[in-house]
Length: 201
Image 1 (cartoon, rainbow, N blue to C red):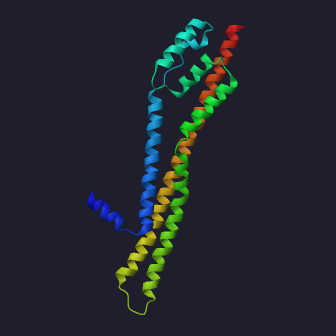
Image 2 (tube, rainbow, N blue to C red; image 1 turned 120 degrees about the vertical axis):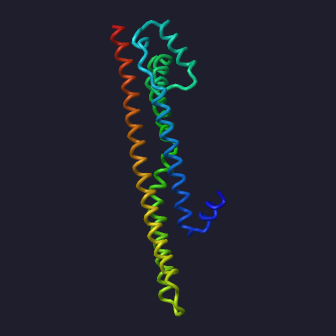
Image 3 (cartoon, rainbow, N blue to C red; image 1 turned 30 degrees about the horizontal axis):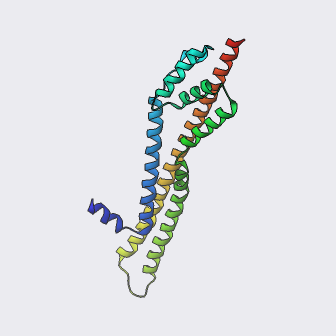
């Protein structure tokens, strides 16, 4: 562990900044992946009681859903439909809260996607300036110093682009998941309201 820390601290400042960005990026990606995987694992088909206008059955369904510690987001919507009698304002607020929860930390991925190339360009400029300063000096500079500057320039550019591409793809994927989840929530609400109107007619 100490060897890794020493290796990181001996790197160029822009490389350290890119390392921190990559850690943040992967931490957010893993966090959101675990969120969606756990959400998929908790999914259950729509309970048949939701299509019935019998208040006693709905009460039983409500108690059963409330007893669950970790509910799927669709189960929260079903619970809202049962308890709030399909209040549009309440359900819209619930969907908004669910979207906020699903979007957690995605802003950090956006930031990493934007900062990655910028830090990479900064490292490129600093690395090339090191090389040119060495090559143009009065005292003859060793080839190792020039090659180090070029190496920093190339590495920071590559790492910055890798971070940006990874974060951008992750953002696009997670936002697609969120859009699909919103469509599912709206579909469940519409399905419940239509079935209750039909059964109540």
